[in-house]
Length: 550
Image (cartoon, rainbow, N blue to C red):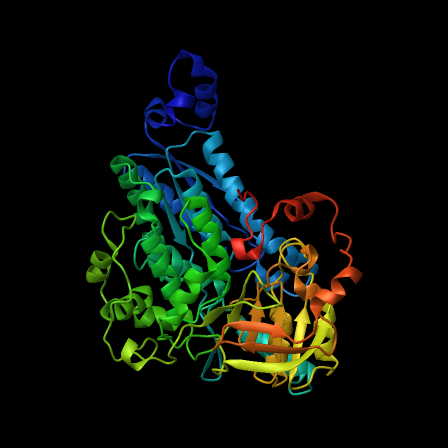
């Protein structure tokens, strides 16, 4: 056992003395020591149930013969931070969470680990830490929030953001906005569409790091505690079988994950996060792998933000297993290992799918759209690539006039003041990983556009990124970013911009290089603390925005 390094032999008497002070007996100390890590916080619903789930996971570890050690790390909630300077901390928190898990587990030489995660960045951080440490480990998602109800309509936080835009346009009264606000989020759990949290929870399962079906259980379902207990038992099985995350993670599992994101029109943040997880797993993965996945995989799940149904309704229809089964039937998935010790296809065979009369997930032959929900573009605006989000009404080409803004706040103000018109291409720069710093999501702007009825009439490009709740003709992750001299820094008001998913290009006819001699790098937005360190260390979005690139 790794933990023998802190508990075995006369020289470890001081460590054992401290362990005894926590209430442990000789028998407890002799057992495998398991970290039960969670990202509990009561600042938002997303992670609200994780402390309770941790107790169930600890019980599962004990029942299977291990000694659990519970600790928590931070979480930044995008739905609260969105549209503020606080959003800079969101992507940065992914690295801090992964680093803190690594440091606490390695610092105490623990034998195995369960990570309980909720809001967006906690999920990829869990996978990154598991891949990096490569000790027996499992991740469990705390679950989606139940959807709110407005009349007979299911609503999520997406509708609240869009209602802000409608209110600003005079289409919605203050009382109507308040009514939506009060009904959208009824309790614990992460945002209820195929936004980033639920997209990445599906990714965890497809990568094999979470048992099939357990991430689909909603946050307030009593079965979630049973799932946590099972994970406690299962991590001990992994320990005894010496099954580690890198035994599960493979090129095939990453290809499967990219296809599942495409098939559900999931969050484009998955591109960024899968690149980062692959980096920590030492598995080659590049932007073109995502293009192949999206090109060859139709959208078969009718999910918000571009579709009709919520994550709860997907769970009722069969969840991740339903989507995977449809893709498997069409030979669009590869068999791969999972943390249960079974192969993915064996997990699917064992899944109890509900009756097939559901409307949420279609068969591949009856797809909603012929290709996945994103595309990778290149051009003189993004020579290192960018991600086009296609979770809208099916536009594949947009040509318009640049409206240039130096940050998100400027763009949002322009939308709210009715300065953006049909045919405009909003350019938001200096929001990249280093320039932001932190690569903020532009949901406040994109939702305001939808609320004003401009969702399909305006395009937006940025070196920042988008919330999973964003829909419309949106291009993010433009690389190189403006802060590092990328061409997006050279665009001017009135430039013609063409975005074409058919040719996979994003170009302007402006002579950008002739402007380069006049360009000067902006002063760093932050000069001290965690954000400053992140800005100095972070890699390009095209490489996953990791801080330990080599």
